[in-house]
Image 1 (cartoon, rainbow over the protein chains, first blue to last red):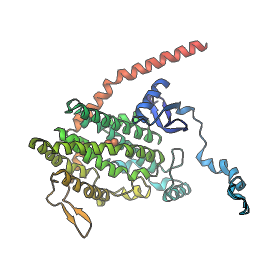
Image 2: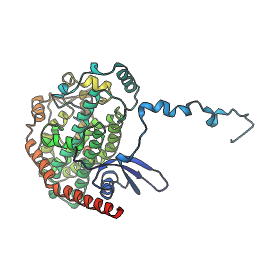
Image 3: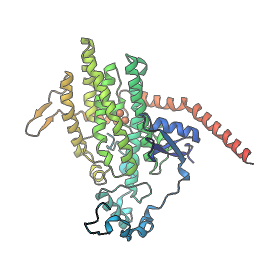
Length: 94
Length: 333
Ligand SMILES: [Fe+2]
Ligand SMILES: [Fe+2]
């Protein structure tokens, strides 16, 4: 058994208006220290205006080996893209 | 350095590819050859996993041990400005170690195991950090030469095949340029000073030049694992290629500073379009790998002391969390 502190995934919002994006991870005994470690590790140059931390063990991930099946339904639906529709040149700006 | 196998037992610890499922292996090799990224949960051959774990953890250890020769000068920096800069630089190196430990952990080795391997002397780290920092110009020389060599090594690793490693490298490379520039800036300023200060710069150059060239690892004909590592894109250029690039980039910078490169054989080779340079003392390199560098013992002692003396902080944080957790349970009950 490892005595390491739990692992937390760190998400940083770099500017107002942008999504939080995964930056990396930190070890910390609790959420409050995870936030502090995240600040010191991932925002030393004002890279963020907001931080999220979430315990890595709470993340449910899809299985990369099953990616083919999982994403297959979208593969055949080319009509979901605007380029599928061939409109006459007379129709401008659509 | 970072992509150089420093552990001579590595081959024994790495299971042969013939033991792998041939279909999975072929699919893996095809993905890597196609410049795709491998992510933690993807299938990978055990040899890839172990080689990368060693390489990334060795890289992480180098960042952490690399804090020591510079940290040594924090209280003696000649001005508040230089002190603040050096503190930020050393803190960055700690950050680099953390990014890299996290990347290595995704391969299934815990942080504790890696730290333990370092502190017990089983793990290797870059030989450069086993040299002492004797005068203030050494701090400039480290930024200019050592971080400069690290940049040469790390830039191609931003496209390494293992996703978490590549992403850590991108983050690190963004920060390294400050390290090199502050070092060169420090030396430029000293070269405007007294004769004694200029002599310190030359003295630092004389001691750091050759160890910096050694950072790229043994010559290509003596790096047995290189071919497989290059095929797997966990190394993107050979030791000798990177070393040559470094020499070509650095010699004009030395001229601009007004100092001499301590190599009588150094000269521009018009036909090759590169500098020729003298023979490296590989006995000194292998001695440093074996932990016989001038201050190797001191470095490990300092690392272990930092770990032991920080124990109370970790214990206090654990105790606080345990108390909070108990409060949450009793509030919920
Ligand atoms: Fe670094
Ligand atoms: Fe650096």
